[in-house]
Amino acid sequence: MDKLTSMTVFVKVAKAGSFAGGARDLGISRAMATKHIMQLEGHLGTRLFNRTTRSLSLTEVGGSYLERCQQVLEEVDEMEAAVTHLQTEPRGLLKISAPQVIGATQIAPAIAEFLKLHPDLSVEMILQGNIGDLIDEGIDMAIHLGGVEDTSMIARKLASSPLVICGSPAYFEKYGEPKSPEDLAEHSCLINWAIPPRDQWRFKGAYGDFMVKVSGRIQSNVADPIRVGAIEGLGLVMLPKYIVGRDIEKGKLKPVLEEYGLDPLEIHVIYPHRKYLSAKVRRFLDFLQDWLPHRIGIEGNRTWSQ
Image (cartoon, rainbow, N blue to C red; front, side):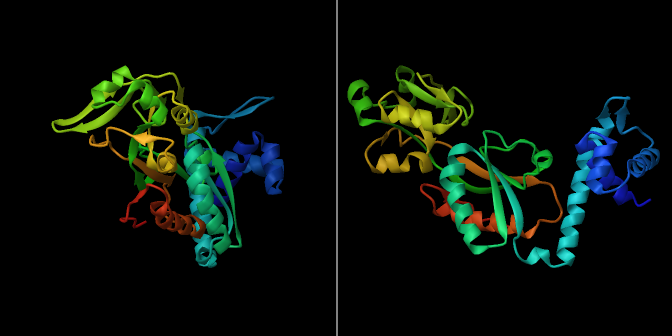
């Protein structure tokens, strides 16, 4: 039997959770699906499934093999698409994951403009705090803020946004402005968990970087609650300029400690390690590379070469 076909059967059975379900999805008999799996296990010299009379589950080896099979089959699909010229124009479904704020304010408008240019493409957008399991969830790319630790994925820097410490005029009138980072210990600092470390703000000084421990009355894993809190006079925030830029322009917030440097917040796009990129992924990556630097307060990375 063809090994690629057996891998396809294996993936379908694993996803369906039964030989009958996988066979039904492929339009083959249960016996044929079982034969493919048995041959695959014989070739590999290991069991891929734990079988009982009532259930079917992946072994530890089977779980690892499933991930690799999905990647291989995806690469085969992309190579076939290249041969049949499907790579020349974005089409089909593009699945994107992004954090809530940048997803809604920056990536969503980019998607809208991109879809106007490519009528054969549709987009499914997921707003979530983490990037999720790209392969298991079928996500083509994920927008990620900050550093990237997962070396199993490809990460490319799209842009970086300056961080700004700011508060409302009403807050400063009541409590005064901090003159140095050390003064923040006497102020209410509203904390965004998405910018690590969670309760410390990092500054650049004449003798190197240093951290200042902060605390306040509002903490959140997204920016909006603490941004609103700052506007209402509840404390200071450290947020990307693309989030607070307009509030500063309108006088709702006022920057402080501008003479002290802050590391910018890096914006990355992450996608599974694949040799071939589909047209929809490659084109949207290029589009984002041009789009993001022109948004409020975002500095572009002009070294994109993927």
